[in-house]
Amino acid sequence: MLGFRSSVALPGLFLALLFAGCEAELGQGGAIDRPAAAGREADRVDRVVDGDTIALREAGKVRFIGVDTPEVYGGVECFGRRASAYMKRLLPEGTRVEYRPGVEQRDRYGRLLAYVYGPNGRMVNAELVREGYATQLTIPPNVEFAELFRRLAREAREKGRGLWSACA
Image 1 (cartoon, rainbow, N blue to C red):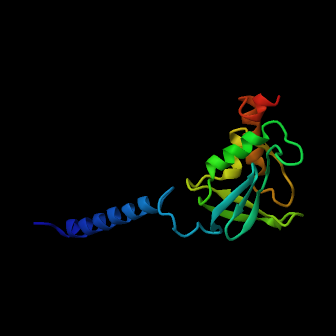
Image 2: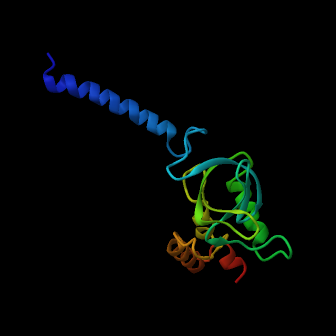
């Protein structure tokens, strides 16, 4: 015969397992149309403009805060085409992303300035710097992750990742 503890514990365990299954379904890379994380907006990639700018279906052009990739327009810079190609592989057309605008939300070209999160939940801005496709670029007042980007750039440079080995 089940005691009081067992009769309470078993349904509780069942509910915990049920909710854990829901969390696994909605977790990183899970359901496509799940709600955006708190403080973020969700959208889909329309196209990649270059290594540090994408166009979203609803929000329009988005420039990644805190990073700078080599140019591919108006004079191609070393590693510029590779940075753009990396972005196209990372965020192909139709990819669901989340973004959070910066303190200053628009640049002088009218682009939305934002921290962008890929389908795996990782910040794309940081990934660009970590993998050596971008350098760190701090423009106040959008400085929230400046120290992180600085550390990732130093690490990429020390390990000779990406542009740090190809363009040195």
